[in-house]
Amino acid sequence: MNVAVVGGLLVGLVVLLLVLLVAFAAIAFNKLRRSDIAAQEALGGIDVQLTRRADLIPNLVETVKGYAAHEKGVFESVTAARTHLQQAAGSSDVAEKAAADAEMRQALVRVNAVAEAYPDLKASANFQDLQQQLADTEGQLSFARQYYNDAVATLNKLVATVPWMFFTGMAGVRARTFYEAPEGQEQAPQVRF
Image 1 (spheres, rainbow, N blue to C red):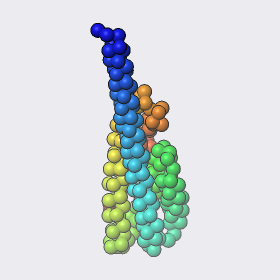
Image 2 (image 1 turned 180 degrees about the vertical axis):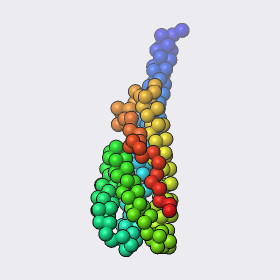
Image 3 (image 1 turned 45 degrees about the vertical axis):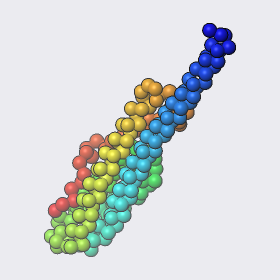
Image 4 (image 1 turned 135 degrees about the vertical axis):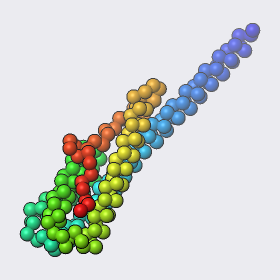
């Protein structure tokens, strides 16, 4: 074989390998970025549900206040929990969201305990409607948490496995934290009477 032909084949082979390597790097970059964006989007879904819950709380509190105005401490704790929940919804800290979520759950339990003492309140159509909206929101929040954890699991598997792990720095992607309910908060608060 001619040296020029062999040299041309080697150059062609090197160029082909470089093109394949660049193509794979682009695929890896895009796959990692898409997974990271999916996790960010899923975290935003949790924020939407936390905000929805926080927006329902003033209506619930006002309805209960009409029947139990002397329960000032309960209403103050709900207001504080709602404020923390709204702040956490704007944060990217998953642990902060979980803590604010737990605080709001406890506040809702206290409001529901107050409502339990007032049969007229429990029979109120407005109160029942708010209960149903809160129950629906809890279901959607539970789904949003699971969706986020699924997205994080997919991302974290990519970040920790070959060959994707070699491209995490280039893609600016890192493993994310799972959404975990604080101790004792595995169940949604009871909103039924």
